[in-house]
Amino acid sequence: MLIEEPKTKIDRIRQQLYIVIYGTNTKAGKLFDIFLLIFILLSVLAVMLESVKEIDDNYHSILLSAEWFFTILFSIEYILRIFSTKKPWKYIFSFYGIIDLLAILPMYLSFFITGSNLLTSVRALRLLRLFRVLKLANFVGEATNLKSALKASRPKIIVFLFTVLIIAMVVGTLMFLIEGPEAGFTSIPRGIYWTVVTLTTVGFGDIYPITPFGQFLAMFVMITGYGIIAVPTGIVSAEFAKQKSANKEDKSTKSKTVCPVCDESGHKPDAQFCFNCGEKIKI
Image 1 (cartoon, rainbow, N blue to C red):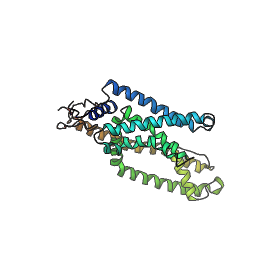
Image 2: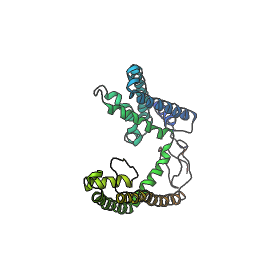
Image 3: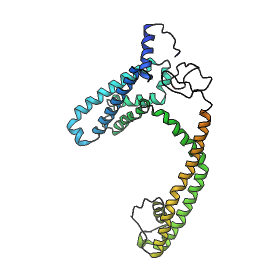
Image 4: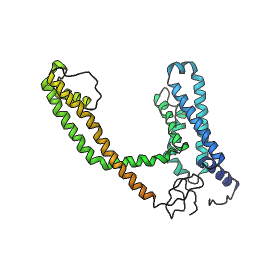
């Protein structure tokens, strides 16, 4: 690993903190991630227990003390992350930087905003920090592929949805004419509502056909509903497979160099810095 020699004691401390906090290939870095994982899970558990009225009434002071303990702990970690990185503003405005800030901000805001369930909900976002600890960020690429597949499938899905909408309007109108107000179909929109509920296989059961012809039409809608559920899945799956194939071809052109600090791979052949942590890498 090509790392510049620290010029001062502060630089040396900053470099050591960076390796521990951001690196995962050292014993200290792995231990840091393990403790961070435990504290995140415990803090989220405390937030969940606080939302249970019976538990909060009996153990409110304990839960509050635990929440302040986790908040101070995460605040120290947040400050150390800013201190140890060479580009603090890049970290602060990054996805993980914002999540880290949201993990500690609610308790400080509680001095000004009291009795808000929103603050409790925001504290539960600490669970997103597990993406960093468990290296789940590697799976973000899969989410990107899915997003691209959905975007590529958009024209086909729009046509499909319009077809479903037309079917719902036609069947809803027929049900209104066949069943009438006696069966709960008091209007065409009410019939369309029943058709959509039936097509999606939800079936609330608040209204249902009572005439033989209406029940026959309902059978047609139910069977059609299973096919309708499968169609968009097939469209997106086909596009997703194309995205996966394209990504494999793209990865085959990339270098197999692994960053010694964050263990990230897949760098371009001419890359001089790690695209994940920014450290210099050997080419």
